[in-house]
Image (tube, rainbow, N blue to C red; front, side, top):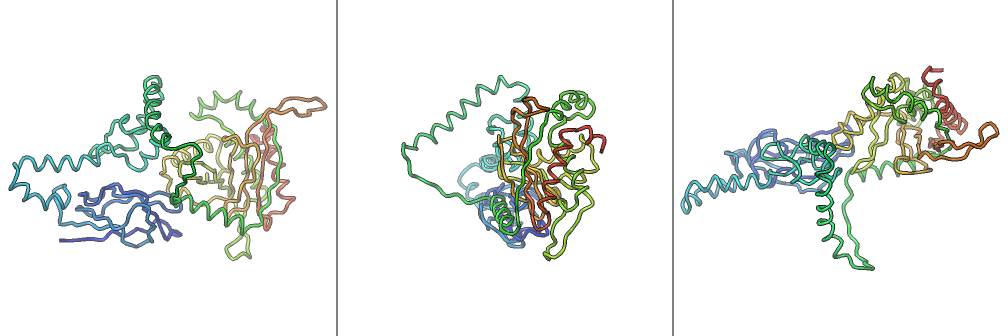
Length: 423
């Protein structure tokens, strides 16, 4: 018997531990070289791990275990061959002596297909959860009948093209599945349950507490009249889509306005050095965009926003958001950022105090747009208004600087021609 040990690979420079979030292959299953066997969740991303050799997989760690980098999480018995598990190989002589030989491959095939067939990959499963799709509604094209990410995406595309067909089916399935869950819950129930926090959720919690405790964080507020921005989008949206193939959204306009002011006010775009005695200034603007995913909030940066046009910014944000919700962001795409924008308005938030994304020194919070009466040139007019919130580290940004920053951003958004002409 030849056994090799599989250790947790180095995933990132600052990552010392990962969580084994899910096994893709069963304990004792036969695996091919480079076949995905499990999925690790780190502080910043999810990583699929391939088999280093072909043979029988032997679990050492269980799902949910926290494993240090370099520790053994599985073994592979390379002496097992033939595309079946070691247990199947060992029982073959007994099967041959008591049953016809022709039944043996049938049993192995059934055992092999029972797991792979209809089983989604981790990224495919996340997409299925997000769109409430079930395995039986997807045509699997992966190896051994596995459901791939492309299979799920095709099912989503088909659903959007012909919503009338899946519409009646989906509610029935949801109702059948939801009924057993709701039935056992009696009135005035006092039951409770405990679930382990995901590694991403634990990391988010740790970073938020650190930002709260280790920065002199304050928040200043202002409001912006989006009349001109909305008129601009309405007038040029069709031409913009025709030219660039993507819609002109609020995020690119807000990002560009912030980038322009950040280049003028480098302190808001700076950060305190690790020694606590120096300030690191940036001659560029990398804006981290807060994206909500099924597993938590991620903030991948759009790099060099100061040098990008609106279409490039929109394309970058759309691409990062898609990857974030599919769980396919790389560590490189998650790192960096000199300033953050978070838009709680998409969830209906009217006002909030966002927490700084360390080691950055400031974060802008956008909120929902509300039609409110405003005094304009002595007359009361209804205008689309949004509250803006800037949380900042008072150790590096003065109160006057924070207020000035918000005022400048407000002025650019209320007169977008100055933004477009770089005035």
